[in-house]
Amino acid sequence: MMIKIYLLAKIIHRLFLYLTSFLIIFMSITGLLLKYSFFSRLPFLDLVLVRILHNDFSIYFVISLSIMMLTGIYMYLFPHLRARNNRRP
Image (cartoon, rainbow, N blue to C red; front, top):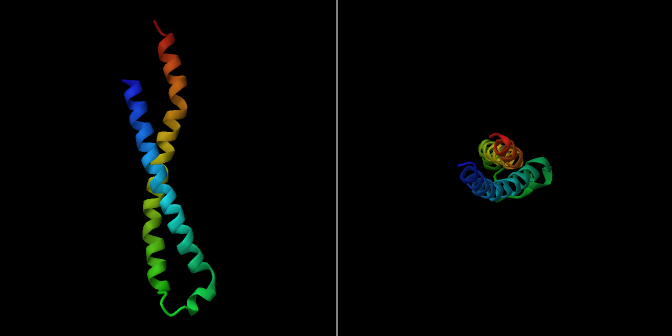
């Protein structure tokens, strides 16, 4: 049963790794657009929309990173938990 949970955690971790990577790129681009004032001179760029998108996607970024962190911790602890359970008679 522990191996099935480990494999599921590995799949979930990998999926959220890709999602988190995409969100990091998106958040960094929108953050750069908001940080530097020379982007405000571009007529086709709506900084209010960029700010709203950056703010809205930050929640998904935190959730994705948290799930990836929890599955990563489980995969890190799995060999220790498995060895501990195998020692018991």
